[in-house]
Image (cartoon, rainbow, N blue to C red; front, side, top):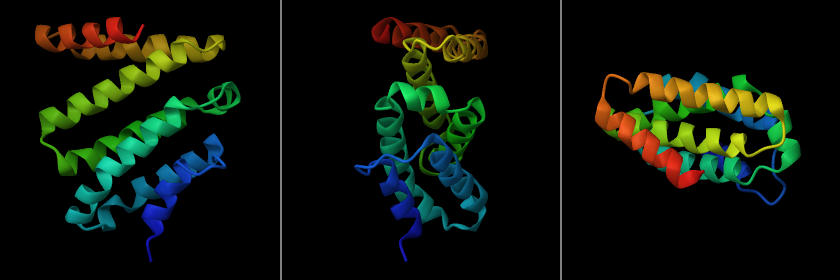
Length: 148
């Protein structure tokens, strides 16, 4: 009955799912967002953001090595879709931007060159996207300085 909640609970289970399973979970969320009631999405979005952030923050070196860029992109896209149903556009963009920066910083601190390059590209994309808005650029730089 509570399939979506159970999938989210897997992210915080004692036995952590592999990055491939997390990819599949978010593939299911992303594929079924159009079938879910808007109020249910609003209810699920904050829990999804919290559990996903916690899962990604607590990744060990092996999980960091095995998570693919496609999975990170899918997670970010799905979170953006869910959060956009529960927050205004500006707020949802800010949440996703902070999420992307935090994840990129986490990957920057890993010992895997490929992940570090990927993190730098993500940070460059965020900065370029906020280039036309000085206030947004300042916020992005402030987040970077706090987390590095």
